[in-house]
Amino acid sequence: MQAWSVEEATVLWNRPVARDTWRMALQAPRLADRIRPGQFLMLRLANGRSDPLLARPYALYDVVRLGSTGDAIGVEIVYLVVGKQTRLLTELRPGETAVVWGPLGNGFDAIPPARHLLLVAGGIGQTPFYAFAAERTGVRHYGAEQRTELAEAVVLCYGARSSDLLACVDDFSRLPIEVVLCTDDGSAGRRGLVTEAAAEWLDRPGNWVVVGCGPEPMLRALQQLCGRRGVPCYLSLEVPMACGFGACFSCAVPVRLGGAVDYRRCCLDGPVFDASEVVF
Amino acid sequence: MTASRVDLTVRVGPLRLQNPILLASGTCGYVYELAAAVPVQRLGGVIPKTVTLQPRAGNPPPRTVETACGLLNSIGLDNDGIDHFLDHHLPRLSTLGVPLIVNVAGKAPEEFARLCERIDRVADVVAAIELNLSCPNVAGGIDFAVRPELTEGVLRRCRAATGLPLIAKLTPNVTDIAAIGQAAEQGGATAISAINTVLGMAVDWRRRRPRLGAGLGGLSGPAIKPIALRCVWQLCRAVSCPVIGIGGIQSIDDVMEFLVAGATAVQIGTATFYDPACAVRLVDQLPGAVAELGATSVRDIVGSLRFRQ
Ligand SMILES: Cc1cc2nc3c(=O)[nH]c(=O)nc-3n(C[C@H](O)[C@H](O)[C@H](O)COP(=O)(O)OP(=O)(O)OC[C@H]3O[C@@H](n4cnc5c(N)ncnc54)[C@H](O)[C@@H]3O)c2cc1C
Ligand SMILES: Cc1cc2nc3c(=O)[nH]c(=O)nc-3n(C[C@H](O)[C@H](O)[C@H](O)COP(=O)(O)O)c2cc1C
Image 1 (cartoon, rainbow over the protein chains, first blue to last red):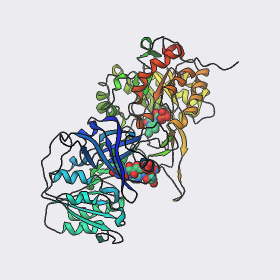
Image 2: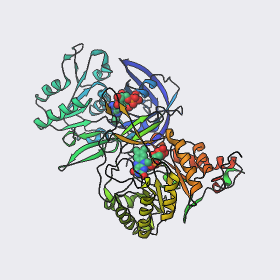
Image 3: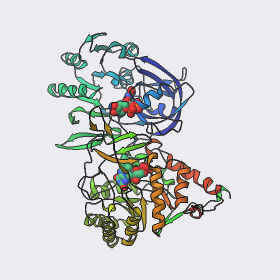
Image 4: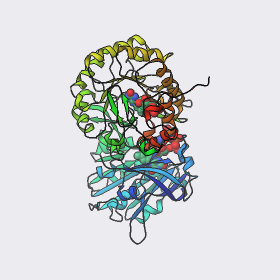
């Protein structure tokens, strides 16, 4: 069991970046020092309220570093406003506090080093990919250990319903990666499903490893696509969680292990799973 | 009275606990998960998830739904069975440096007794057994704690199977919890813990479906505290064994309310999910609150509730 900790975190900034999508930085040095790409944190509003009662999980988007020294002082998350807590999150002002705990989950360290990485994001599922792509291209590093297995090529296929929902595209575009945008209505990038774009990239030569994060139909399509082609595929799953640290057994994910189906805790054994094990 | 001189120790039958703050079953996993961040050895005791004789996969997701000031769950006793518990979890649990209370559930009185026998063989690392007589989430399982004679029957079988202290955990989903408590005591319970979750439901009207995978679930959290306090008070008047209070506890005021109402100790449940260090903080705050009543010991305030004449 990896060490995690609880911190009262001060909001550094919190601003809209796309339709219903906000980007927030929280000062939380203990978390920032250790969290790795693909891991997540739990966030609870600190004002002692009982509704919403529970914390919510958010992926690490990026770590905030202090200018010259480069010390990790905070974390950034990017969130889509969908319900009770995310609506209240938009009201947090710099200087106000929230309680956070982490780092949680296995993160993308569960994925072996890959020469050619194809990242497939649907909607808000893009959030864990910035840190991952930045690290595997050698642009940034996260956590105590300096990892060095760089990828030769990283491609991000990022799909959303329409252009106004695409968030943080500038960040991705500044990385030495290929960014392929897709929208359902053709308002930005190619018109069509992100999985179609992904399938075309897999036709190109390379030792592809596919990593997906997004809505369930997209993940299921990726699982099938990669299964048919015998391409290694990993999925970062979003399931409701009550605690995030393994105590409640709510975030059960059905997995196939040696023929039998059993549940695994998404928060401890995931959120990143080998797609061939996940039962949708 | 100064807070630094307050005696926090309590007795649950032959069991002496360094303080009355315990972690409730099913809300602290197998404890090691929480121990990675929180000093659980400072607590009075911990109670891992219910163990059954055979492995159980648990209920289909979604297994929890948040409600106003509460949480509905239908985990369904997801666990790998007693063999795995003894081989895999117990060695780890016994190194945590905190009294361990093992919570068990069976589909029949014989199953409860067999579980108690197995745990009795490792009695050197187990402080007590809590009998989950009342899990509302298990289809086909009998809810023993809804009928006094069934409750007493399970207790008698277990009492014969082990010398360890037995804590009977009761459900609030009954007409007369005092009668169930008396039956448990009659059957040989060392103590009674109450309450388990309150049977509830959540509906997604747009899809015309229940929100929980299992349909019904158990409500916990701040929303159920008044029900829990009422049950604890009724039990304390009806039995002479210690009562352990559970239900919606998240603050030191909540702890004090249960103690004054008659609870010898309390268990922290859902609060651990949304405030992982809650129980340990309550241990820190307890001496000050006890001192505020002019008492020198937690034991002096237990059951000191007064009704206006
Ligand atoms: C590991 C992990 C990482 C995540 N990272 C991010 C992220 O970086 N950015 C982001 O915006 N969101 C992320 N999420 C999803 C986020 O946790 C939910 O959107 C959030 O809990 C919604 O809270 P709410 O109170 O606003 O909504 P609620 O009022 O609780 O629910 C509103 C609606 O959202 C649904 N819902 C609730 N929780 C989830 C969930 N976990 N997954 C899918 N649907 C849900 C509910 O069923 C309901 O229909 C992540 C989830 C996980 C498990
Ligand atoms: C997710 C969840 C799982 C639970 N699992 C168990 C269990 O396995 N065995 C048990 O005896 N009680 C179980 N309970 C009940 C709690 O131990 C406790 O009795 C109840 O939640 C009320 O306390 P609270 O309001 O502080 O949570 C569970 C409760 C929750 C919320």
